[in-house]
Length: 208
Image 1 (cartoon, rainbow, N blue to C red):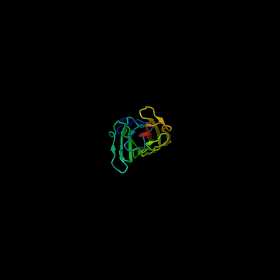
Image 2: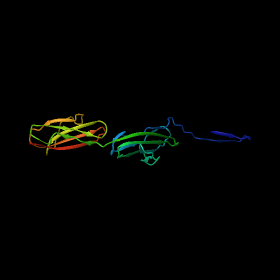
Image 3: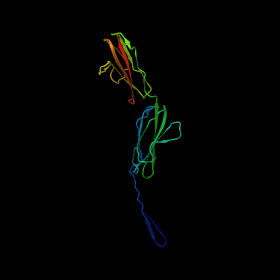
Image 4: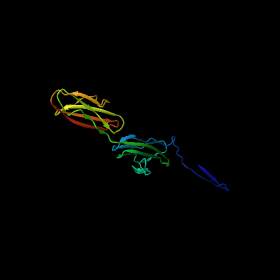
């Protein structure tokens, strides 16, 4: 309450309501990854605590070399999540702002790096061999994100069950094996990056 009093002794009062939050506004926003292959989807989630509710949000991004931000949701609306798919390799800046009902705004920035898409360049030593001869299989990834794991398997053409030659999605990237019976076989080599993206490559092996 604020009182004012004039020389005649007249007093006028005015009351104000002050809401005090026990904690300052905090921006707890997150993104789903900081490195992804170009062409993959990134998810962004705005989150706030403290301050004075209700909250509104602004989610935007730009190429690192650009000065123009692209809004992904209505600026300072109630939508708190968004996604986008960067199609080019490079570096992107991401900004998520949270604002409370007093107008206080807290920003949080992220750096996103996009890599070349995952490519499977695996190969086998031969696609036609004599029965009893060793065939070597090589899992070769390129691009993608982070470390790689592999799956190398084969089956006789027409069969449903695959035989694993190395522990599935382990770090062993080569395998040697021998087919003792003539016929047609299918071989599959999968490469998987740390984002979970999988690329498969199949070969037809003829045993004579």
